[in-house]
Length: 40
Length: 514
Image 1: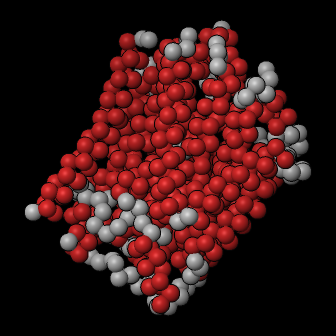
Image 2: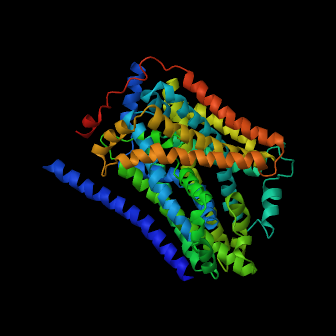
Image 3: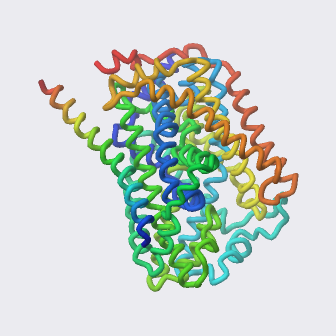
């Protein structure tokens, strides 16, 4: 593949998949916090 | 009043949990357009550089609208028209307009799923032969009639269509938890497995890099072209299932205190993640076909039904091995992606009419689904392809975008309810939305949607569409006008006494979080 295409593909995937990973991680983290708070 | 309380009781017992909601929203958003529209739009609008306006449009329009719709459904605790009516009777017609649009889309979308189902069978033994276009139009659809002519029913389309409706209505009959949520829990993982198998095979084919270069080669000059930005906003808008009334309806099925903002974000990012992966799979296969036929990729790069039912059978014919299996995987993934969206589209008018007419869920599924199934027969005739194409163009390009624009303007400018909505959703969500979210819906989304409508209208008035005769274009405009009239008519009809009262399980944002 051409260098420009590889860079564009990787940046695009990193932003979009990074966004997905961030939001899922946030949901897991806050879910855990809520369970912990509810247990107190 | 007792009837309204009964519906509220039924609603409390039959709800999504968070994962179920996200999967159902993802299932609704991921449809045929992710597979056959996004790759071509990206390729023809700057390649890799298109990802910049695309992500920008996601953040500034798609996600804000999605959060708004989900919050409306949850805040006002009802199917889309009931939620809109509770917000203000003056804007209820917009929701009915969206529901009329959903009805039109559902009656032809199911036919395309039926085609994909038939092609899953044809893939075994590559029954489409070497001239795939002649097979589609002649042998399969028998579309040898003039555009605008109905012709006779085509049994090879009718039989899978009956199966599609049986599956859709069967799932809707089962309700929210055991129908919509269970279907999403089965369909989404299945779709991921099927499509990832295709992508992995695609990128290992000879010539795949040619396709990926064509898809991702960045043309930054395109960023100066306003049309590229318009295409990015249009793609995000069509892709996220906003403007249908689906997300408000789904939002109403979330229990009180549920996160709204982050669940919407997860659904939006899942949709775009799948879309980009689909682009990689599709263009790997197109690069392979172009290399095998020794032609430039622009001669095989297509979108829509041509890509799925003409070009992909050619690709499958050319695969070095396991042709039938890969054909089956591809068309099965189209069926799964299409079905999960179709179910959610039908759900909008099933839930909407259930609320307004006071029917039970099963009554509503039977009446609405039965009526829609009968209307969809028009698209299984010999002339069905042309009716489908023209209905899709007018209802998608104009109806959906106009109703989305009306919705954004109504809540941001006319009712000024955005602060109320974010004050409601923020305390129970993983992240909060602020003035930026409000500005996106107030100042970014409406002008972009207006520009999309304006450019499409200008092109259509100048050039018509598809070279079709005026009669067929008139039908397209007629379908568009009828959806608006239906919206106004249903919106004008009054609700049974007490139906607009908020049910007991609803409260203010503060109550919802405690």
